[in-house]
View 1 (cartoon, rainbow, N blue to C red):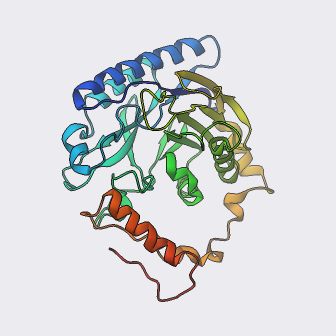
View 2 (cartoon, rainbow, N blue to C red):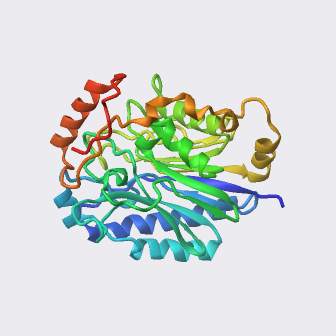
View 3 (cartoon, one colour):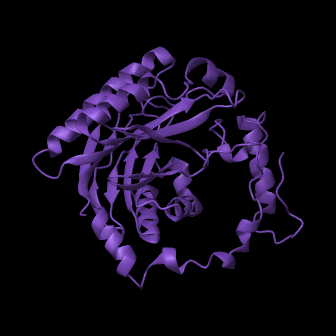
Amino acid sequence: MTIRYAAAACQTDCPNPLDRRQMPANTDRMLAMIDAAVAGAAPFLPVRLVVFPEFAHAAPVFPTVAELREKLAVEIPNEHTDRLHAKAREHDVYIQSGSMIERDPRWPAVVFNTACLIGPEGILYKYRKVNPWIPYEVHASPHDLDGYDEPLFPVADTPIGRIGTAICYDWLFPEAIRQLAANGAEVLLRVSAYMDPWGATEPMNWWTIVNRCRALENMAFVVAANQGASLRHYPPYSWPGGSQVIDFDGRVLAEASPGPGERIVVAPIDISALRHEREQRRGHHMLAHLRTEAYPVYARAQYPPVRSTGWSYERNLELIELAKATAGSEDPAYTRRRV
């Protein structure tokens, strides 16, 4: 069976909510952008996948966990995911929600930065950012929680392919995206708020470099939606957008011109071609050629997992210094520690 459709990367430029009452306005705009993406592609290859950026619903604009929990954190599912679910049913599409600040009764001391994959059948998974952008981001990594028993890198098997998600800074760790591919992902969704000077503008343009590398080294499509928020909407950084769709050989299929502002870019996703290449290719098949046991670095911890009471800017700085002191060390006594 041939599986070919269009994916839309939708970058937003919305004011950042300061409390939960302001969040529905962002969801209103997202729903309108889904309608626009579907309508614009209707005469061509129909859109079946829509991806939004990190913090599309709400950003961590407060410096402490307590403030985030009080003013912005929401449980999932919620009114926003319900509305996206209704839109997914209306258009028969799959929607990567962008991210929101999540609270969970199981983990009352923390908040998560969470994105949902939502299809006509409902929420397929929640992805909680494994690599917060430390020291600034004080939401928790699920990796660090004692007793956390949910998949860190979930992948959904859908009628439009096997889909995995990671958020922004996660993508600077090849290991995170490789694990999604090892879990079966064929389409990798990057939900990002990637700012200048590392964003989609030269001379650095880490955005494009990383997206293309993660695509080719995992032989997977990448649909990457980046924040287009202006400095006025999201200080203290400016947000260069540049949302992209990349094929499994690292070719840029579509990209928004760098700069703030709303954009929708659409490109074809050919799952049948990807599966043929994965089956037939002998050279440059990094998933098959991976010598996992050659890398003992992964047998030990580097950045110490944080105890549930430890998420703060100051604590992050302390742990970064501790990790730097042992980076590159071959000391066999260095073992996994919780601090």
